[in-house]
Picture (cartoon, rainbow, N blue to C red):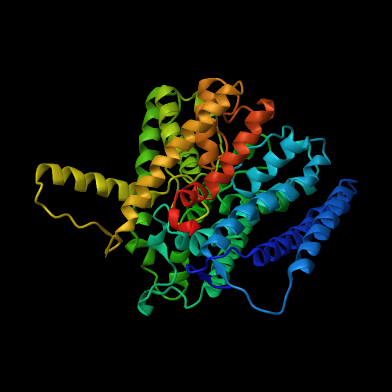
Length: 488
């Protein structure tokens, strides 16, 4: 199913067929927590079984109604619509098992959308008392969402040519620059690397003291830079420096470009160090960790080593948009409060599971600012914009600036909506930034690390669910709608 830019008429059959297959796969995934609950003699397995049957029935009808022998092709319009509907459909059906523990559908949809978009915000309190099947389902949603995000970022978004993602087209005209010859092989390679990271993270966590169940759940939510935990205290529950160090490593790996990993598996071991966004990402984390650690050491009654531990874990978690926490960083003082708010906008690398703006867009914006200042100083000076050793395509600067403008406008719009629904300004602003950046915990007493989204108004929950969706789609739904050629 190649993606073509020349398609004119919207073809609904391949979209419905693909959505049906996704629902059938989701139904199959529901069997895993059902088995866990059945093994624990917990009656909640019946909820998963009924949900799986319902989801498989709807998905099966969609497949049977649209399956044909003749081939079909995806155009840009189909890719745009399918990607959006895929997140909405899967979140809608993945919410059903949560109703079995007493959640309203609004709360259940919020939880499933937060899981699939790897946001990590939760409306559930008392996680330690939940059935293990439901805890595993939350983790599975984030694991599934993380892989879907990688596939979307390396296959779909570059072809839509929005937000600067055209910089990372997997297949270029010159064959020497191809990562793999076919998009299908690229997806399989990314999935293989994702599974290797999940397995490695699970084994590492188990060896460092987690139970096998906790290790599996936290591996799913670490590699996907998601943040759901099986405990209300998140990573603070374990109080283990070794586990936090392991989590830092795997959060960073999850926020690196998967295409770079693929290049490494094909013998190009120096690929990460040649990538400007990887160098910028790692350097930024190190600098911010040192700044926060020094601040904590000077302003809190703790040792420098403890300050480094707290700063390393929580800063990495926010920058990678994972959302784990080992302490209430909102209580570290005004400096830390303001800095962590700004960190919500940064994000990881393109083609990773991380959210927010992404390092490469900030780098391109910095290059554009420098070029503009040089032009002011010397109007006749010609400044060539080069990224990763290549001249930037002409449409990339505009795409990046448009993305940044719409990103900030989206955060502002959702801040107004949340404030109108009854949230205080700090909670509204930071929750909007956190949702669009798919981070999870925000700042403020309602939605911070020590708060709960369960107490916010119903309207705010629906608004945040849509903000998560837009953020995970990297706002391409908004950007594409403004492209006149999309509707030709």
